[in-house]
Amino acid sequence: MGDLRKIFDELNKNCSYLILRNWNDVLEDKVYANTEEDIDILCESKQSFIDLTGATSIHTNSHRDNYTVNYKGTKYRFDIRWIGDGYYPKVWEKKMIANRQLNENDVYVLSQADYCHSLTYHALLQKPSLSDEYKKIIGKLYHIIDHNNHEYDENTIQKKLKEFLDYHSYKFSIPQDPAVFINWNRINIMGIRKDNDYRLLARRTFYKISLKLKLTK
Image (cartoon, rainbow, N blue to C red; front, side):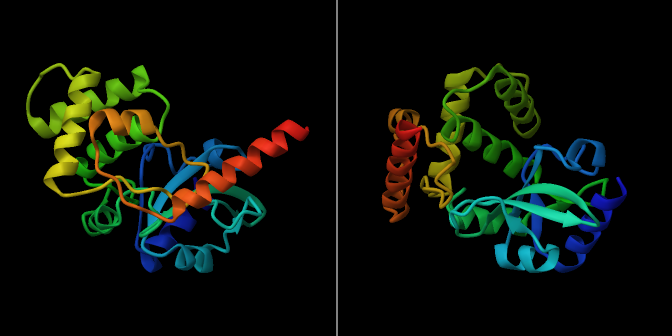
């Protein structure tokens, strides 16, 4: 875990960041060194992260947020989310950074409540369907923050997310990264309020171009 430890030590000193999920093995070089596995990061400023780590984009599309950090010849992949990118509502992203916690491995992670709700948001609204794995993890998280042993099925999980978003007046935001899936059907069924965002036009353009490229192959 040497090289990743050094990267995160530098981030701890010079960057307002947090790891969004899967942080238990985040320092394991055997998992992330020169592999397709990526580390999901939320930071205050994407440019600060890039300047600090020398991260380079994997794509030519400037709206994509997939980067590679090359450290002493070893490559690590990062998905860099940043305040204002629409991956989560901007106000919530700011609060996530403000509420971040340094865990036992000395890396910054989400508070328990933010982790629970942000994972629910990700699993329900940025995935085509709620997987059994996510349902199990989210259920355990709600048991902890709600201090109960109730069963959290898909309908209950949807209700909990809607209540959370409404309570904080968070609206669904369109990610700048056009590759992030949006489950419009679930958003509409749940009655989640949406931001009117210019990124919707960019997203539609991206998919039209992608479709044309697929059809010409």
